[in-house]
Image (cartoon, rainbow, N blue to C red; front, side, top):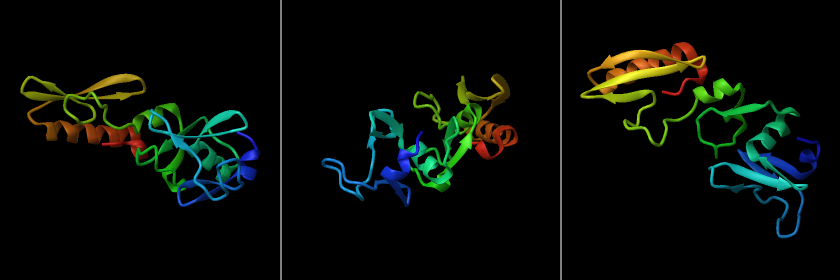
Length: 154
């Protein structure tokens, strides 16, 4: 990141706004475009930047290696929805995978029952097999809250 960000951008209500007019872009226009990975990018001085990282830099004058969207929505770039995180903390706050067979984070079908598993410090911790998805989800939620604290997503 560089100091040019302060010359080029303003922040308002979770949006990054151009401070200067450039070609078809007018001062006050929202900056950034959504690309296929679902994130907002902005380009200036020949480089692409993630909008949430530019917003963090505008507020803090530096940017950590990892930023986390607290609500898991990569398009919600309100400064109060962003927090510095480690790579592991960022992973703790991930949403359920799109290819999940149950649609519930940490839960897999085991015949007519449901298994619950959580990864802590890179190692799988098996939480047990339960008669219902709700019971398995409760076990996952308890473990996530214990191990991941404010980064738990259940």
